[in-house]
Image 1 (spheres, rainbow, N blue to C red):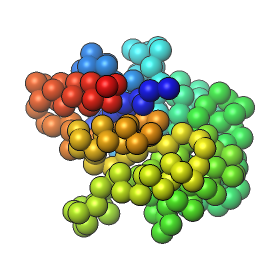
Image 2: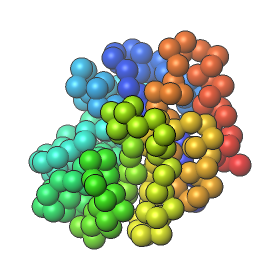
Image 3: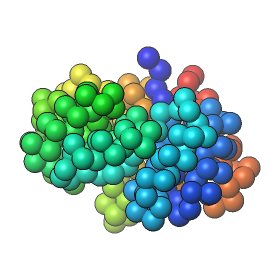
Image 4: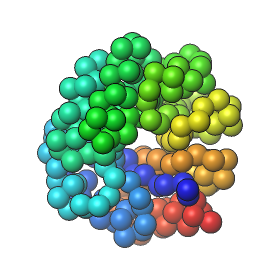
Length: 216
């Protein structure tokens, strides 16, 4: 199965999110993500608006769940999401609940490895506890303080360690997104660095380059 391209809609308004989502869909992006900040500001109305406009696209709720996984799974499903994320650093019970609730509701639970000192071990643990996907994540603050790090660092190790799909996220460049796909990532997440403020020609060029490179 080919690697999917996901756009993180880390914006402030539903109107802007729909506008950028429209550009992304035109460029061939596969999955749409309601970013954490956007949902904090606008709530799950973001997800319902995306689902109304794009009835067939996978939609990811970037909840970053640390507790109450069953509750968050239910409200994500009710809003029309297909995926939600739970922190791999959460309690065993939370990861188990995330995976089980996802299975019951027809969702995919993504275990986000950000915050984990040993991300590979965290991914193995999350898989054993029943989540359906790993989010191999280099967080914003972490990469801001450590400019030499890339989200694809260590990717080969986690791909060898788990059997479930692995998503790569965290300041990906066009080249890194394509490399991740070649290495075997199931999906790559395009965020801030490739979503410039012009919301026009450069954004379209970036997204088309990622989609073409990943599909190649």
